[in-house]
Image (cartoon, rainbow, N blue to C red; front, side, top):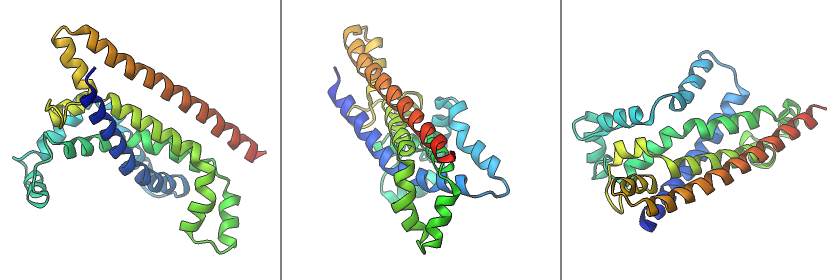
Length: 226
């Protein structure tokens, strides 16, 4: 069992979730409550990581943020280090790849909030931020928790974009998925089996939890309509 790789994967998942969930709440609420020209294109763009192979996303990030590109050179001058083959680069890649997993459940949760509730909050003189924190978030928490679990579990098992963007540097970019691949290449099937079992158990637990939350959110939505 590669505990260092597992710890790095958990760290990457945690950082990604901390960055992505607040952003997803803002974007999901915006998409749920507002109609504007080009909204369908924005939603389609958000969904691109679901249909585009991770290696393709990793390739474009590698080229776009590498030391040979103007953006990569600019970021290297600002940050003092390059993003490619560094943990910070894995964070950028993980955030981009997991955008649909974060925004979609939260957007659907906000869409289930009755318009009358938001109107009542406005009539009471609540600011949009206060209405969000005091009324809306307590109602949409199943969607937020679903997004959190999906993002965390997906980052934990991500392979393609991590390998393309970070390579295989122990303690820096070698996640548990990369470690499983290395173990198989070295014919260490016992270690690969142990690590795969950990990811399998986590994935089953995460899916069971998200399914339960989705049903609960659906039940709440139906009861409000009644």
